[in-house]
Amino acid sequence: MSTFQTLPGFREFYPGDCAVRNFIFDHFRRTAKSFAFEEYDAPIIEPMELFTAKSGDEIVSQLFNFEDRGGRQISMRPELTPSLVKMIGNRANAMKKPIKWFNIGEQFRYERPQKGRLRSFYQFNADIIGDDSPGADAEIVALAIQTLRNFALTRSDFRVRLSDRKLWAAFFESHGLDGTDTQAALVAIDKSEREGEAKTLEAVEKICPSNAGKIFEGIQRLKNVHSPRDLEKFCATCENLADAASGCAEFFALLKRMDEFGLSDFVTIDFGVVRGLAYYTGFVFEIFENSGQSRALAGGGRYDNLFGKLGYSGLPAVGFAIGDVTLGNLLGEKNLIPPLPREVRCFIVYTEQTEKIAMAKVIALRERNVDVDYCLSPTSFGKQLKAASQVGAKFAIIFGDEEVKANGVKIKNMLSGEEKPVEISKLAEVISQ
Ligand code: HAM
Image 1 (tube, helix red, strand yellow):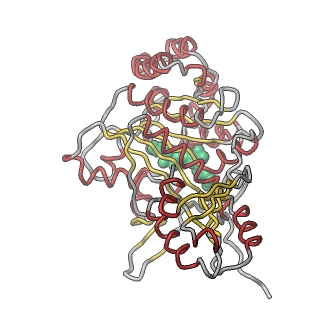
Image 2 (cartoon, helix red, strand yellow):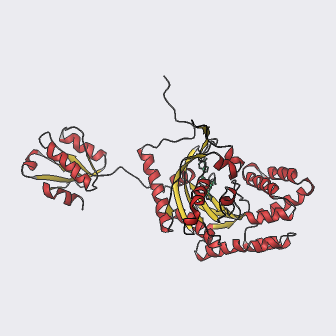
Image 3 (cartoon, helix red, strand yellow):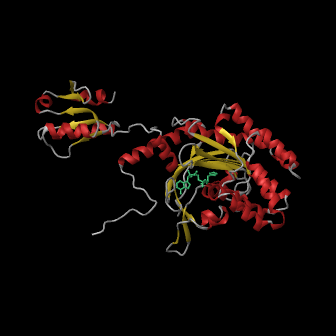
Protein backbone atom coordinates (compact mmCIF):
# COMPACT_ATOMS: atom_id res chain seq x y z
CA MET A 1 0.00 0.00 0.00
CA SER A 2 1.46 3.35 -0.89
CA THR A 3 1.04 6.10 1.65
CA PHE A 4 0.86 9.80 0.92
CA GLN A 5 4.06 11.65 0.09
CA THR A 6 4.83 15.32 0.53
CA LEU A 7 5.17 17.13 -2.80
CA PRO A 8 8.76 17.67 -4.01
CA GLY A 9 10.25 20.90 -2.68
CA PHE A 10 7.71 21.27 0.15
CA ARG A 11 8.48 20.78 3.82
CA GLU A 12 6.54 19.46 6.75
CA PHE A 13 7.32 21.11 10.04
CA TYR A 14 7.13 18.71 12.97
CA PRO A 15 7.09 20.55 16.32
CA GLY A 16 10.92 20.51 16.63
CA ASP A 17 11.18 22.00 13.11
CA CYS A 18 8.55 24.59 14.01
CA ALA A 19 10.58 25.56 17.07
CA VAL A 20 13.60 26.23 14.83
CA ARG A 21 11.43 28.14 12.36
CA ASN A 22 10.03 30.27 15.20
CA PHE A 23 13.53 30.90 16.52
CA ILE A 24 14.51 32.24 13.09
CA PHE A 25 11.29 34.26 12.66
CA ASP A 26 11.63 35.77 16.17
CA HIS A 27 15.07 37.09 15.21
CA PHE A 28 13.71 38.53 11.94
CA ARG A 29 10.86 40.25 13.77
CA ARG A 30 12.99 41.58 16.60
CA THR A 31 15.62 43.01 14.25
CA ALA A 32 13.01 44.64 11.99
CA LYS A 33 11.41 46.26 15.01
CA SER A 34 14.77 47.54 16.22
CA PHE A 35 14.99 49.37 12.87
CA ALA A 36 11.46 50.74 13.44
CA PHE A 37 9.87 48.76 10.58
CA GLU A 38 6.14 47.90 10.76
CA GLU A 39 4.80 44.44 10.00
CA TYR A 40 2.27 43.89 7.17
CA ASP A 41 0.85 40.93 5.31
CA ALA A 42 -0.56 40.20 1.85
CA PRO A 43 -2.56 37.39 0.21
CA ILE A 44 -0.71 34.19 -0.63
CA ILE A 45 -2.39 34.07 -4.05
CA GLU A 46 -2.75 37.02 -6.40
CA PRO A 47 -3.93 37.68 -9.95
CA MET A 48 -1.24 36.07 -12.11
CA GLU A 49 -0.69 39.26 -14.07
CA LEU A 50 0.78 40.94 -11.01
CA PHE A 51 3.83 38.69 -11.42
CA THR A 52 3.92 38.24 -15.20
CA ALA A 53 3.90 42.03 -15.67
CA LYS A 54 7.35 42.97 -14.41
CA SER A 55 9.22 40.41 -12.33
CA GLY A 56 11.16 38.94 -15.27
CA ASP A 57 11.07 35.77 -17.36
CA GLU A 58 12.84 33.50 -14.90
CA ILE A 59 10.27 33.93 -12.17
CA VAL A 60 7.37 33.71 -14.63
CA SER A 61 8.64 30.29 -15.73
CA GLN A 62 8.50 29.20 -12.07
CA LEU A 63 4.93 30.21 -11.21
CA PHE A 64 2.53 27.88 -9.43
CA ASN A 65 -0.50 29.11 -11.36
CA PHE A 66 -4.03 27.90 -12.02
CA GLU A 67 -7.44 29.02 -13.13
CA ASP A 68 -9.93 29.42 -10.28
CA ARG A 69 -13.61 28.44 -10.46
CA GLY A 70 -14.48 31.95 -11.59
CA GLY A 71 -12.16 31.62 -14.60
CA ARG A 72 -9.53 33.96 -13.12
CA GLN A 73 -5.85 33.37 -13.79
CA ILE A 74 -4.30 33.02 -10.35
CA SER A 75 -0.78 32.46 -9.06
CA MET A 76 0.68 31.53 -5.71
CA ARG A 77 3.10 34.35 -4.94
CA PRO A 78 6.72 33.64 -5.98
CA GLU A 79 7.85 36.80 -4.17
CA LEU A 80 6.24 39.55 -2.13
CA THR A 81 7.45 42.74 -3.82
CA PRO A 82 4.62 43.11 -6.40
CA SER A 83 2.00 42.59 -3.64
CA LEU A 84 3.70 45.25 -1.53
CA VAL A 85 3.62 47.67 -4.47
CA LYS A 86 -0.08 46.87 -5.02
CA MET A 87 -0.93 47.46 -1.35
CA ILE A 88 0.94 50.75 -1.10
CA GLY A 89 0.05 51.85 -4.64
CA ASN A 90 -3.65 51.60 -3.83
CA ARG A 91 -3.40 53.85 -0.77
CA ALA A 92 -0.21 55.81 -1.34
CA ASN A 93 -1.77 59.26 -1.00
CA ALA A 94 -3.00 58.62 2.50
CA MET A 95 0.32 57.24 3.74
CA LYS A 96 3.15 59.11 5.45
CA LYS A 97 6.51 58.55 3.75
CA PRO A 98 8.92 56.96 4.09
CA ILE A 99 7.02 53.73 4.57
CA LYS A 100 9.18 51.13 6.31
CA TRP A 101 7.46 47.74 6.23
CA PHE A 102 8.47 44.14 6.80
CA ASN A 103 6.87 40.75 6.39
CA ILE A 104 7.71 37.14 7.15
CA GLY A 105 5.85 34.88 4.76
CA GLU A 106 5.80 31.85 2.50
CA GLN A 107 6.66 32.07 -1.20
CA PHE A 108 6.26 29.45 -3.94
CA ARG A 109 8.49 28.87 -6.95
CA TYR A 110 8.41 25.83 -9.20
CA GLU A 111 12.19 25.38 -9.16
CA ARG A 112 14.22 22.19 -9.31
CA PRO A 113 14.52 21.27 -5.63
CA GLN A 114 18.16 21.13 -4.52
CA LYS A 115 20.26 22.11 -1.53
CA GLY A 116 19.16 25.60 -0.51
CA ARG A 117 16.40 25.77 -3.13
CA LEU A 118 12.86 24.51 -2.55
CA ARG A 119 9.44 25.07 -4.07
CA SER A 120 8.05 26.54 -0.88
CA PHE A 121 10.20 28.69 1.36
CA TYR A 122 9.86 31.61 3.70
CA GLN A 123 11.27 35.07 3.19
CA PHE A 124 11.87 37.98 5.52
CA ASN A 125 11.12 40.99 3.31
CA ALA A 126 11.90 44.57 4.34
CA ASP A 127 11.35 47.60 2.13
CA ILE A 128 11.46 51.39 2.34
CA ILE A 129 9.00 53.15 0.04
CA GLY A 130 8.93 56.87 -0.73
CA ASP A 131 12.57 57.78 -0.14
CA ASP A 132 15.08 57.92 -2.98
CA SER A 133 18.15 58.76 -0.90
CA PRO A 134 21.27 56.63 -0.44
CA GLY A 135 20.36 56.84 3.26
CA ALA A 136 17.41 54.53 2.55
CA ASP A 137 19.68 52.18 0.55
CA ALA A 138 22.13 52.05 3.46
CA GLU A 139 19.35 51.45 6.00
CA ILE A 140 18.19 48.44 3.97
CA VAL A 141 21.70 46.95 3.68
CA ALA A 142 22.32 47.62 7.38
CA LEU A 143 19.09 45.84 8.35
CA ALA A 144 20.05 42.82 6.26
CA ILE A 145 23.50 42.70 7.87
CA GLN A 146 22.20 43.26 11.40
CA THR A 147 19.63 40.49 10.98
CA LEU A 148 22.40 38.00 10.22
CA ARG A 149 24.64 39.35 12.99
CA ASN A 150 21.82 38.89 15.50
CA PHE A 151 22.07 35.14 14.83
CA ALA A 152 25.75 35.46 15.90
CA LEU A 153 26.94 35.16 12.30
CA THR A 154 30.12 37.15 11.70
CA ARG A 155 32.12 38.73 8.91
CA SER A 156 33.84 35.42 8.30
CA ASP A 157 30.49 33.67 7.72
CA PHE A 158 28.96 35.95 5.06
CA ARG A 159 29.64 38.88 2.76
CA VAL A 160 27.48 41.50 1.09
CA ARG A 161 28.21 41.86 -2.61
CA LEU A 162 27.24 45.35 -3.66
CA SER A 163 26.70 46.42 -7.24
CA ASP A 164 24.90 49.08 -9.24
CA ARG A 165 22.59 48.50 -12.16
CA LYS A 166 22.68 52.18 -13.02
CA LEU A 167 26.35 51.88 -13.83
CA TRP A 168 25.75 48.74 -15.88
CA ALA A 169 22.95 50.52 -17.76
CA ALA A 170 25.21 53.54 -18.44
CA PHE A 171 27.97 51.21 -19.63
CA PHE A 172 25.69 49.43 -22.09
CA GLU A 173 24.15 52.70 -23.22
CA SER A 174 27.63 54.05 -23.92
CA HIS A 175 28.03 51.11 -26.31
CA GLY A 176 24.77 51.92 -28.07
CA LEU A 177 22.53 49.25 -26.48
CA ASP A 178 18.87 50.12 -25.86
CA GLY A 179 16.80 49.18 -22.79
CA THR A 180 15.73 45.76 -24.09
CA ASP A 181 19.28 44.83 -25.11
CA THR A 182 20.57 46.01 -21.74
CA GLN A 183 18.04 43.77 -19.93
CA ALA A 184 19.19 40.81 -22.05
CA ALA A 185 22.84 41.57 -21.31
CA LEU A 186 22.11 41.82 -17.57
CA VAL A 187 20.34 38.44 -17.65
CA ALA A 188 23.45 36.98 -19.32
CA ILE A 189 25.75 38.47 -16.67
CA ASP A 190 23.47 37.11 -13.94
CA LYS A 191 23.62 33.66 -15.54
CA SER A 192 27.38 33.71 -15.96
CA GLU A 193 27.65 33.28 -12.16
CA ARG A 194 26.23 29.78 -12.58
CA GLU A 195 26.91 28.92 -16.21
CA GLY A 196 30.32 30.47 -16.91
CA GLU A 197 31.65 33.43 -18.89
CA ALA A 198 31.08 31.74 -22.24
CA LYS A 199 27.34 32.34 -21.86
CA THR A 200 27.92 36.06 -21.45
CA LEU A 201 30.05 36.22 -24.58
CA GLU A 202 27.47 34.20 -26.52
CA ALA A 203 24.67 36.52 -25.39
CA VAL A 204 26.68 39.68 -26.13
CA GLU A 205 27.48 38.35 -29.62
CA LYS A 206 23.76 37.87 -30.21
CA ILE A 207 22.80 41.28 -28.86
CA CYS A 208 25.52 43.33 -30.53
CA PRO A 209 27.53 41.31 -33.07
CA SER A 210 29.47 44.32 -34.40
CA ASN A 211 30.90 45.36 -31.03
CA ALA A 212 30.77 42.16 -28.97
CA GLY A 213 34.52 41.88 -28.30
CA LYS A 214 34.81 45.38 -26.87
CA ILE A 215 31.65 45.08 -24.77
CA PHE A 216 32.73 41.72 -23.40
CA GLU A 217 36.15 43.11 -22.50
CA GLY A 218 34.44 46.03 -20.69
CA ILE A 219 32.18 43.61 -18.82
CA GLN A 220 35.21 41.66 -17.62
CA ARG A 221 36.90 44.88 -16.49
CA LEU A 222 33.86 46.08 -14.57
CA LYS A 223 33.51 42.70 -12.89
CA ASN A 224 37.08 43.12 -11.66
CA VAL A 225 36.34 46.44 -9.97
CA HIS A 226 36.41 45.88 -6.20
CA SER A 227 37.22 49.27 -4.66
CA PRO A 228 35.95 52.85 -4.97
CA ARG A 229 39.31 53.82 -6.54
CA ASP A 230 39.04 51.07 -9.17
CA LEU A 231 35.52 52.25 -9.89
CA GLU A 232 36.60 55.83 -10.44
CA LYS A 233 39.38 54.59 -12.71
CA PHE A 234 37.00 52.40 -14.68
CA CYS A 235 34.63 55.29 -15.31
CA ALA A 236 37.49 57.60 -16.29
CA THR A 237 39.01 55.18 -18.78
CA CYS A 238 35.78 54.00 -20.35
CA GLU A 239 34.60 55.94 -23.38
CA ASN A 240 31.42 57.97 -22.84
CA LEU A 241 31.16 56.91 -19.23
CA ALA A 242 31.77 60.29 -17.64
CA ASP A 243 28.04 60.57 -16.89
CA ALA A 244 28.02 57.26 -15.15
CA ALA A 245 30.77 58.52 -12.87
CA SER A 246 28.49 61.27 -11.61
CA GLY A 247 25.66 58.72 -11.42
CA CYS A 248 27.88 56.71 -9.11
CA ALA A 249 27.71 59.52 -6.54
CA GLU A 250 24.76 57.73 -4.90
CA PHE A 251 26.70 54.50 -4.81
CA PHE A 252 29.60 56.28 -3.10
CA ALA A 253 27.18 57.93 -0.64
CA LEU A 254 25.84 54.48 0.23
CA LEU A 255 29.38 53.24 0.87
CA LYS A 256 30.05 56.29 3.06
CA ARG A 257 26.98 55.62 5.22
CA MET A 258 27.99 51.96 5.60
CA ASP A 259 31.34 53.25 6.82
CA GLU A 260 29.62 55.57 9.33
CA PHE A 261 27.60 52.58 10.57
CA GLY A 262 30.87 50.71 11.09
CA LEU A 263 29.63 48.02 8.69
CA SER A 264 32.09 48.50 5.82
CA ASP A 265 33.87 45.29 6.66
CA PHE A 266 30.81 43.32 5.66
CA VAL A 267 30.54 44.91 2.24
CA THR A 268 32.46 44.19 -0.97
CA ILE A 269 32.02 46.00 -4.26
CA ASP A 270 31.23 43.31 -6.80
CA PHE A 271 29.69 44.10 -10.19
CA GLY A 272 29.30 40.40 -10.91
CA VAL A 273 25.99 40.76 -9.07
CA VAL A 274 23.17 42.14 -11.22
CA ARG A 275 20.16 40.19 -9.76
CA GLY A 276 17.80 37.91 -11.64
CA LEU A 277 14.67 40.02 -11.10
CA ALA A 278 13.97 42.52 -13.86
CA TYR A 279 12.67 45.49 -11.88
CA TYR A 280 15.82 46.81 -10.17
CA THR A 281 16.93 50.25 -11.28
CA GLY A 282 19.81 51.29 -9.01
CA PHE A 283 22.12 49.69 -6.49
CA VAL A 284 21.63 45.94 -6.01
CA PHE A 285 23.12 43.50 -3.54
CA GLU A 286 23.25 39.87 -2.64
CA ILE A 287 24.48 38.31 0.57
CA PHE A 288 26.45 35.11 0.23
CA GLU A 289 27.63 32.66 2.80
CA ASN A 290 31.40 32.27 2.69
CA SER A 291 31.66 28.56 3.20
CA GLY A 292 30.71 25.49 1.24
CA GLN A 293 28.25 25.95 -1.59
CA SER A 294 28.28 29.72 -1.23
CA ARG A 295 24.58 30.17 -1.96
CA ALA A 296 22.69 33.45 -1.73
CA LEU A 297 21.24 34.12 1.70
CA ALA A 298 19.53 37.33 0.63
CA GLY A 299 19.08 39.73 -2.24
CA GLY A 300 17.65 43.14 -2.89
CA GLY A 301 18.15 46.62 -4.25
CA ARG A 302 16.48 49.78 -5.49
CA TYR A 303 13.44 49.53 -7.77
CA ASP A 304 12.22 53.03 -8.52
CA ASN A 305 10.08 52.18 -11.58
CA LEU A 306 7.95 49.29 -10.35
CA PHE A 307 5.10 51.44 -9.02
CA GLY A 308 4.82 53.19 -12.37
CA LYS A 309 5.15 49.95 -14.33
CA LEU A 310 2.32 48.35 -12.36
CA GLY A 311 0.09 51.35 -13.13
CA TYR A 312 0.46 53.36 -9.89
CA SER A 313 1.90 56.82 -9.39
CA GLY A 314 5.64 56.55 -9.20
CA LEU A 315 7.31 56.05 -5.83
CA PRO A 316 10.96 55.32 -5.13
CA ALA A 317 11.51 51.99 -3.43
CA VAL A 318 14.29 49.85 -2.02
CA GLY A 319 14.26 46.53 -0.18
CA PHE A 320 15.53 43.01 0.24
CA ALA A 321 14.50 39.49 1.19
CA ILE A 322 16.36 36.88 3.24
CA GLY A 323 15.31 33.27 2.62
CA ASP A 324 14.91 30.79 5.47
CA VAL A 325 16.37 27.74 3.68
CA THR A 326 20.00 28.74 3.08
CA LEU A 327 20.02 30.68 6.33
CA GLY A 328 18.67 27.70 8.29
CA ASN A 329 21.30 25.42 6.69
CA LEU A 330 24.08 27.87 7.55
CA LEU A 331 22.94 28.29 11.17
CA GLY A 332 22.79 24.51 11.50
CA GLU A 333 26.29 24.04 10.06
CA LYS A 334 27.69 26.71 12.41
CA ASN A 335 25.87 25.28 15.45
CA LEU A 336 24.07 28.56 15.96
CA ILE A 337 20.68 27.06 16.64
CA PRO A 338 20.48 26.55 20.41
CA PRO A 339 18.64 23.56 21.89
CA LEU A 340 14.95 24.46 21.78
CA PRO A 341 13.37 21.90 24.11
CA ARG A 342 9.66 21.74 24.73
CA GLU A 343 8.79 23.73 27.83
CA VAL A 344 5.65 23.86 29.96
CA ARG A 345 5.50 25.87 33.18
CA CYS A 346 3.40 23.45 35.19
CA PHE A 347 1.93 20.00 35.08
CA ILE A 348 -1.08 19.20 37.26
CA VAL A 349 -0.91 15.82 39.00
CA TYR A 350 -4.25 14.68 40.45
CA THR A 351 -6.34 11.73 41.64
CA GLU A 352 -9.94 10.71 41.02
CA GLN A 353 -10.85 12.34 44.34
CA THR A 354 -9.09 15.65 43.61
CA GLU A 355 -10.04 15.80 39.89
CA LYS A 356 -12.78 18.42 40.34
CA ILE A 357 -10.68 20.98 42.15
CA ALA A 358 -7.59 20.23 40.03
CA MET A 359 -9.46 20.79 36.76
CA ALA A 360 -10.88 24.07 38.05
CA LYS A 361 -7.28 25.18 38.77
CA VAL A 362 -6.12 24.10 35.28
CA ILE A 363 -8.51 26.64 33.80
CA ALA A 364 -7.83 29.29 36.47
CA LEU A 365 -4.07 29.11 35.82
CA ARG A 366 -4.49 29.20 32.05
CA GLU A 367 -6.67 32.29 32.44
CA ARG A 368 -3.65 33.93 34.08
CA ASN A 369 -1.55 32.98 31.02
CA VAL A 370 0.32 30.22 32.83
CA ASP A 371 0.92 27.26 30.50
CA VAL A 372 -0.50 24.12 32.05
CA ASP A 373 -0.56 20.48 31.02
CA TYR A 374 -1.93 17.35 32.71
CA CYS A 375 -2.79 13.72 31.94
CA LEU A 376 -6.19 13.71 30.26
CA SER A 377 -7.45 10.88 32.49
CA PRO A 378 -6.37 10.19 36.09
CA THR A 379 -3.56 7.65 36.34
CA SER A 380 -0.82 6.72 38.83
CA PHE A 381 1.41 9.47 40.30
CA GLY A 382 4.43 7.74 38.76
CA LYS A 383 2.98 7.93 35.24
CA GLN A 384 1.86 11.52 35.72
CA LEU A 385 5.32 12.63 36.93
CA LYS A 386 6.93 10.83 34.01
CA ALA A 387 4.59 12.64 31.63
CA ALA A 388 5.49 15.91 33.38
CA SER A 389 9.19 15.44 32.64
CA GLN A 390 8.47 14.34 29.07
CA VAL A 391 6.75 17.63 28.26
CA GLY A 392 9.53 19.61 29.96
CA ALA A 393 7.42 20.84 32.87
CA LYS A 394 9.21 23.17 35.26
CA PHE A 395 6.86 22.42 38.15
CA ALA A 396 4.53 19.52 38.96
CA ILE A 397 1.61 20.62 41.10
CA ILE A 398 0.48 17.67 43.10
CA PHE A 399 -3.17 17.58 44.11
CA GLY A 400 -2.82 14.64 46.61
CA ASP A 401 -5.93 13.48 48.54
CA GLU A 402 -4.52 14.42 51.96
CA GLU A 403 -3.11 17.81 50.90
CA VAL A 404 -6.32 18.85 49.17
CA LYS A 405 -8.35 17.89 52.26
CA ALA A 406 -6.20 20.43 54.13
CA ASN A 407 -6.74 23.03 51.33
CA GLY A 408 -3.20 22.61 50.05
CA VAL A 409 -1.09 21.24 47.18
CA LYS A 410 2.60 20.42 46.76
CA ILE A 411 4.72 22.20 44.18
CA LYS A 412 7.56 20.01 42.99
CA ASN A 413 10.48 21.64 41.19
CA MET A 414 11.13 19.11 38.41
CA LEU A 415 14.77 20.07 38.07
CA SER A 416 15.89 20.01 41.72
CA GLY A 417 13.24 17.58 42.99
CA GLU A 418 12.51 19.99 45.83
CA GLU A 419 8.89 20.02 47.04
CA LYS A 420 7.08 22.74 48.90
CA PRO A 421 3.51 22.96 50.26
CA VAL A 422 1.29 25.83 49.13
CA GLU A 423 -2.28 26.82 50.01
CA ILE A 424 -4.59 26.21 47.04
CA SER A 425 -5.90 29.78 47.24
CA LYS A 426 -2.31 31.11 46.80
CA LEU A 427 -1.33 28.68 44.02
CA ALA A 428 -1.92 30.99 41.04
CA GLU A 429 0.01 33.80 42.68
CA VAL A 430 2.97 31.59 43.62
CA ILE A 431 3.20 29.79 40.29
CA SER A 432 2.97 32.86 38.07
CA GLN A 433 5.96 34.54 39.84
P1 HAM B 1 15.27 36.85 -4.57
O1 HAM B 1 16.74 37.06 -4.76
O2 HAM B 1 14.52 36.20 -5.67
O3 HAM B 1 14.65 38.29 -4.26
O4 HAM B 1 15.04 36.04 -3.24
C1 HAM B 1 15.61 36.45 -2.02
C2 HAM B 1 16.11 35.24 -1.23
O5 HAM B 1 15.05 34.29 -1.12
C3 HAM B 1 17.24 34.47 -1.92
O6 HAM B 1 18.49 35.07 -1.65
C4 HAM B 1 17.10 33.11 -1.26
O7 HAM B 1 17.68 33.11 0.04
C5 HAM B 1 15.60 32.98 -1.08
N1 HAM B 1 15.04 32.15 -2.17
C6 HAM B 1 14.70 32.51 -3.41
N2 HAM B 1 14.23 31.44 -4.11
C7 HAM B 1 14.30 30.39 -3.27
C8 HAM B 1 13.96 28.99 -3.37
N3 HAM B 1 13.43 28.47 -4.47
N4 HAM B 1 14.17 28.19 -2.29
C9 HAM B 1 14.68 28.71 -1.15
N5 HAM B 1 15.01 30.00 -0.99
C10 HAM B 1 14.82 30.83 -2.04
C11 HAM B 1 13.32 38.53 -4.11
O8 HAM B 1 12.48 37.69 -3.93
C12 HAM B 1 12.97 40.02 -4.08
N6 HAM B 1 11.51 40.15 -4.12
C13 HAM B 1 13.56 40.65 -2.83
C14 HAM B 1 13.23 42.11 -2.70
C15 HAM B 1 12.42 42.66 -1.76
N7 HAM B 1 13.69 43.08 -3.48
C16 HAM B 1 13.18 44.21 -3.07
N8 HAM B 1 12.40 43.99 -2.03
